Amino acid sequence: MKLKTWGLKKSIWVFHVSSGACNNCDIEVLDCLTPKFDIERFGMVLVGSVRHADVLLCCGAITRQSAPRIKRLYEQAAKPCFVVAIGGCACSGGIFKGSYSIAGPYDKIIPVHAYIPGCPPKPEAIIAGVVKLLSTLK
Amino acid sequence: MEKLVLYIFYFVVFPGLIFTAVIGLLAAWVDRKVTARVQYRVGPPWYQNFADFFKLLGKETVMPEGAKGTGFLISPLIGLAGITLVSTIVWVINLNLAPSFVGDIIVVLYLLTLPSLAVILGASASRNPVAGVGASREMKLILGYELPFVLAMIVPILKSGGMLRFDSLLAYQISTRPFLYSISGVIAFIIVIICMQAKLTFVPFDIPEAETEIMAGAYIEYSGPALAIFKLTKAMMLFAVPVFIITVFWGGMHFNSLASAIHAILKYLIILVVVVLIKNTNPRLRIDQAIKLFWGRLTIWAIVAILFAMAGL
Image (cartoon, rainbow over all chains, first blue to last red; front, top):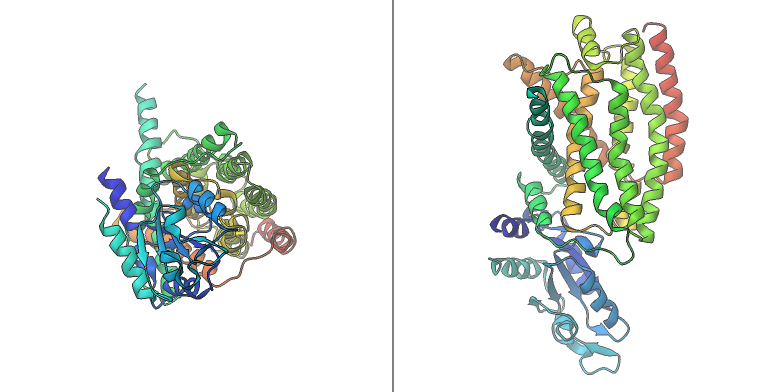
């Protein structure tokens, strides 16, 4: 049991979910993978399939179109899987709050484990958010 | 009876499963660390692949809707069994653990295709179109690289006068000189290194699992322990295949004295780093380009190497 948690803490595979973001948060997520920040130091790797993911990095407010797909995506992920909402839109709806085409922020559709506000949040903030999420694991 | 227990011990613990897994995971770390250094990054700590493995063991196995459960779950084990057997055979011969043990090149050549066949089987059972694309590419890749690989393996057999058994090949290399130190040997060795790159599905031949193109390709539906076993198989191949090639071409690995042990480890590390550097300095080929390379240029060079070997060069 302890070995599993140790493994989970040291090896986080992230999957990038964009539900109609303006691409700004997405670029900041990609910044984390560059040599300057190098999140592979902490064992974090970007994976292509949601089945391999431990953390979903979610950007953007959820549009009506993408809401059922996001739900399905979360159901497809192998548990334990954590959801991190990145950016103002993903946390609360941001400037799109109340718009006719918005189904809501992430926590209305799927459970969210960590919020990283900002428009967009800096890569340092994203790393700090994920580390805070990991420190709650026991 | 005692012999049976001993062989099971060889298979499960010492040169087999556990030993190969530990060294293989460390070799996979060397791969990631060198990759990181090439890209001016720091790279993961040494225990990274162990953490990945234990994490995946603790995760849920999702069965895709409509997948064939038996084939989907049993195929990682087939690949693992194949590569464990390869490693056991090669190491038992190298360390001279069982003098009466018979293993020959043909058995190992067959067993080395098992991990690839397991990938094809698992991907086809998962009922995912992207995995299907990955499986079909893996199939074409096997058809491609097996031809020059087997042709290049004929060179040491010819040079030793028709020896197929590892122990006689090793004895021949010790009594004369390794096959690598001759023109035909060098050509065959280079061909084998390129084919090994495809066997390990490393860039430029990571066509079946092209991450940016078909996500994880054949592995896309795998999660949890099944994925852990696939990752472990790949890590073990990174250890077992170079050792097999060193045994056939480079006089094997000996641990009689400190100097020979260092020499053996250096041989392995050189091959490993060459593989990683090829991986980091090349773009991915298309499947048709890969087939053209294998069946065209490499096969011709392999035939040239065989001709050289027949002429005694």
